[in-house]
Length: 411
Image 1 (cartoon, rainbow, N blue to C red):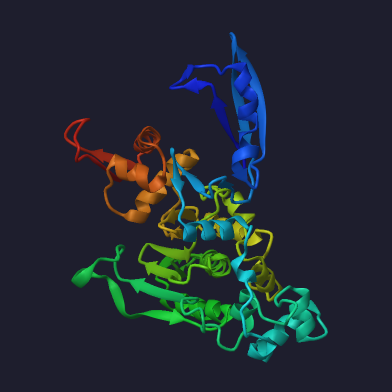
Image 2 (spheres, rainbow, N blue to C red; image 1 turned 45 degrees about the vertical axis):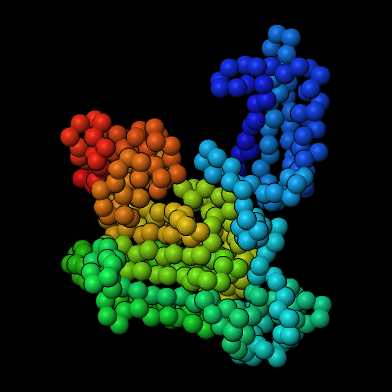
């Protein structure tokens, strides 16, 4: 990730150089007012008798606070002051604190399901279960289990973590609907509980059973029944959601929702500030729960180096479908896999993201709504929408260029 720059001595686009006597105060600001100290690099630009100071802020994974104990998060063009729970979640996301490493009081190896623990012991070649737990840092010096060990291997993982489960739902229409118009299919709203590997297996079995199918030309040269989406793609998304969700957010769960034209996999927690949801490479390098990820990899459920996500994108591409789309909404990460033929070849990344958001919502959107959902400024959203209109992907509907009720919809 690239860092950011601050120019001190410019106001409203005009140069207002500093008195050279104040330059040292600016250079010392990070040292005097942040903890831990924010790493910076300062460069001075002489303008007449004054100085403009260009401060480069290096990227990092630490949550910094001001000298008064406040923490701010940059969102778009504003800095938002975080509450204490928000600060804690950001700290977990940034890696300075890892919730899955938290020790559970009054827990011990006696709480483990022996068969499940021995499976992991065998997978890593440990002599005993106890040595396996110690080698993978799943217990502390007193033998108490960490959250990762509890969720992976305990007899009753739901105790203390009632929302650490996967919910699978299927809808009859492309929209969820509300009230009497809800499109949820009767009996197709089930919760998959148990240890994390069990949750994945149970949820995958339901998706296999409920996945809509369609006729497609197969290698045999005949039209045969084929699942709406490649299994490799949605299974990777499911595994990633279970492994990388924020388990410190205990009021929510992983959801897998099947629609006639897509699958949405929702995972509690946000991407950390240094991850760009539109950049799969940055997503591949991020692991919120490294102990869980390592155990899942040893048990054959995942890869730690990002090959799985590469395969997810490749399998969608091989089927001629739109690439997977990640978005971040209200403290959740949503992966959407569309069953649409690939579109947007030659479009910019931003235009592709706008098109994906419009497919995901499935309803006409005003320009301001597009900007809000994508996080782009209004001028940037307009530029991408015009590109999509020229490519024949979207259409504009309105009475005049200034029509407040004008909207954009998929062509």
